[in-house]
Image 1 (cartoon, rainbow, N blue to C red):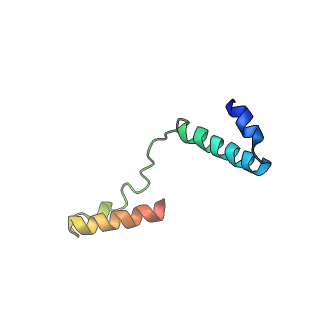
Image 2 (image 1 turned 45 degrees about the vertical axis):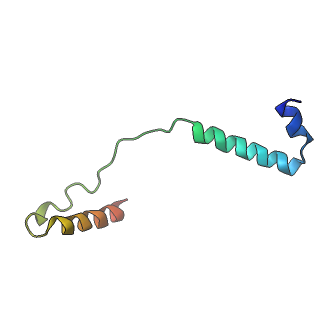
Length: 69
């Protein structure tokens, strides 16, 4: 029995589930379009040099990234 024959023996509702799953698998394996990083946060802390520790700057950078995402 072929895969097509097996699927045709299933109830219509289950055939739809099989189709959805097959489409999901195809989408999951499809090559993803990659884009260059935007770096929207770059330069945000330009005037902060020497005012904060590196840990404080990391926290500010993370906060800035989440606002610009």
